[in-house]
Image (cartoon, rainbow, N blue to C red; front, side, top):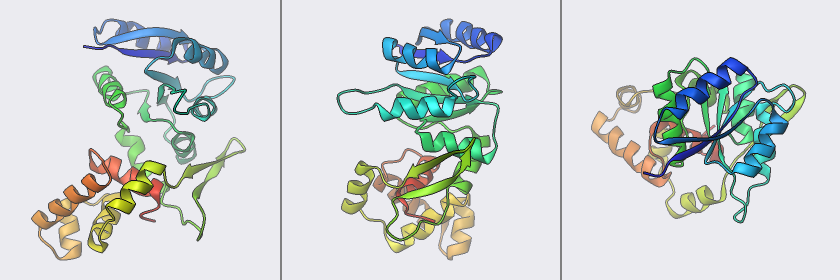
Length: 243
């Protein structure tokens, strides 16, 4: 089994040492380095090229949001960059949305259990987003901002005087949606998924059977190339399919 190469960027010494020690005890994880601030962290990531960077959102110099943004800006087909798993104590709307907009791949609260952290690393390594349930609700509810006609971004409130934006449509999503457009009914179901309704509640609202809802959900996941409802909702929000 190929090990997941992880770099840890965390300014709190006890937290950093604790996470590092726990990760080093797992055969499927290789800790390639650690850093106590954002500047050292960026240098570490450039040198070690890990699969995943675990980044504290509250770093003392370049914070985790700015670090993620700087890292993702350097990415192109000739220069892949590590995936970013944000680790945070903050679950307020502005911090969560800024991390999301900066391009972080996964989001965990610091009180997460170690088993759940391992799960998050594995899911992230596979190319999917792992979003802590405490954060997912904020992501799904607060990114539903009105988009002006012709606009390609949904503006998010400033964080520490910085304005950030969520890119509305990634190229592969655009091509995918053009090839396999959602039906009007699927868009209705998708909107209710984003709003957090269960299959049974969707069935009741749309006056259809639960079986029919499941069929629509399956079609939606296939068309959005999503593994689950949360990922589908995030992609729908980013693409401007729902508002």
